[in-house]
Image (cartoon, rainbow, N blue to C red; front, side, top):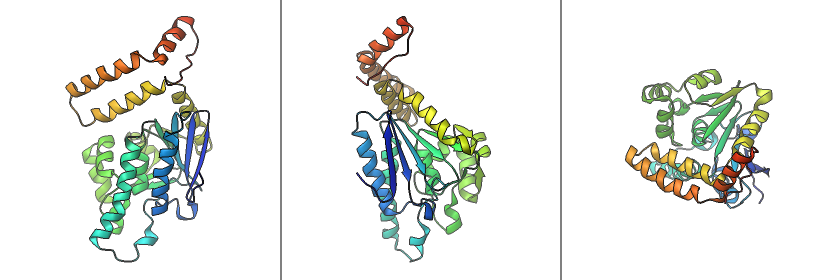
Amino acid sequence: MGYETLLVERGDGIATITLNRPEARNALDFAMRRELLSVLDEIEADPTSRVAILTGAGGHFCSGGDVKTMRTRHTAAEGRGRVEMLNRLVLRLVDYPLPTIAMVDGYAVGAGSNLALCCDLIVASDRAKFGELFCKIGLAVDGGGTWLLSRVVGMARAKELVFTGDVIDAAEAARLGLVNRVVPRGELATATRALAEKIAAGPPLALRLDKRMLNRAATGDLAAALELEALSQGLAIASEDHQEGVAAFFEKRPPRFTGR
């Protein structure tokens, strides 16, 4: 399928989605939001896809909402409608069955910063910048930032970033635990690809179960987590991948997981 605002590449179990509005620093217009939902469905339906990478074209990840569409005053109902489609995307990406990696170069600000946080892992270049810029233009936070950011950096620091609209660099983002890795810009694609390949070589079913459990654990209690672990392990232990993993262990060779 062709897309107006996205570039999509697939191979070796890795699907790379590139936000492709470089003239607007990949701002999330309505077309891009719709197309992201569509491409996530497309990738999930492909049995060969094991990891998804989300990145941006033109030296930036995403500058958030398209400010050009905000020049006209909107009603509260219109404002809510603008965000509801974004909410669908946030829920879809956070709960996406495949492991996801945000590959961030340049600006990831506003809803763009929160879009990166929707992914399971973030690999940033040394020139990446993050910020909850909503207050700079008189807006409240959206894109899941109130939920996602506080769980990563803690409530006090999340409030500081939201209330000030400060932009932080990659080194500070790493110090706060906002990103998993910071690499030189010239090594960003290679480092992200290597991480994706490592994850893609793992057991797809078990990793999907693990992601689901970790997401649920963020809002549940220990008893609920233990119950879900027992259920998930029951599915995993009966899988062909578990048998392959055990065989590879005793044969002293890398396992060849198939997702069955």
